[in-house]
Structures are given as C-alpha cells and as structure tokens.
Image (tube, rainbow, N blue to C red; front, side):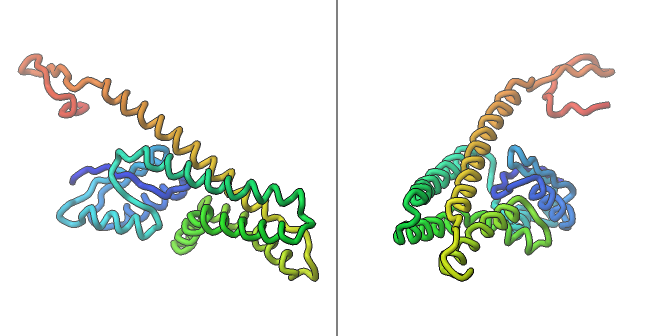
Length: 229
C-alpha cells in the first residue's frame, strides 16, 4: 500500500467530504480514504498495482470536485476575492435602482445585472447542486441555489407581468445573497490558508530524530521509523 495526499477543490460543506470518502472507500484498490475538510486535503492509502492516481482523480471529478497537489493555497483566496468584488460591483447598482424604482429603465437595469450575478458569480452553486443531486445527495450548494433561484425567478415573473401586472420584484435579494455568500467564501478561504500555514510551521518544529532504547542499547534513529510498541 502507498500513501498519498492530494488537494480537493469545490467542497462546500462536510457532506461533500463524506461523499468523497464514501465513494473512494467503495473503490477497489483503495484501502483507506480520509478527507480533511478544513484543509481541503484528501489522504489515501492505495494499491498502485490495482489503481492509479489518475483513476482516483477521475472518481473525485465525477462527483463534481477538482483535485490537485497541496501547495496552491494562495490560488483559491485570490479567485474568491475576484468573484466577490465582481458580484459586489454588479449588486450595488441594483441597490441604487431601488431609489428610482418607478423609472422604467431602473427595472431593466436591475433585471440585467441580477441575471449577470445569478449566472456568473452564482454559477458555481448551480454546478455543485447539480452534481450533488446527480449523485443522490444534497449539500450547501443545493440550499444556496434554491434560495437565490426562488427570489430571482419570482422577480423575473413579476417583472414580466406573470402575476397580472408589474408587481414587487426582489432582484436585489438574490444578488445580495450571492454577494454575501461570496464574501463568506473569500473570508473562509483566507482563514483556511492562514491556518494551513500555521500547521505547517508547527510540523516543521517536530523532531526529525528520536532516541531508541532496546536490547542493543541506545541509538539515534529517524523519527518516522519509530513504531508504538
């Protein structure tokens, strides 16, 4: 058995981690699979004669997640920050249209910008929800997609007169929800990156060697070779 640690992207909650573990545990050739959700890391023990890392990656990708090697902690915070700023830049004008909501152009601006936010910054939630439902599961992406879609689709229906006239619309609600969630994702990824750096610093402090005492006497050996008992 060989042991390997890989990074996993696209997880939104602990249910995602459990789904990956469950699927890999049922895969022939894999003895053990453990996902560290806070660090977004997957540790597997596998038989290289029966299964390769490419096969492991294909299982994870089929579930709707990405896979790579540890060390790209700075990529996700930058991406999440960019999506948050994009969503915020499109949402603020929608909030401004509420002041002049009686003007016919204001409604069209709100509709177009809300649509942009919904299917760009919010697209990742739809993708995550689709893969979760496809694999007969549910996660936070399903809840986010349902909540934002309810506000957006009702507003579209009201805006185009599906309820017997131009009723109240809530384009700002769906856009603000996605913006705040994007902010939360950014803060989470940044905090996780800092926590990961702190853990790595702690690991670097551990001893590389140990003193082994047995019937042959006392000698210094590599700490990684010491086994309990």
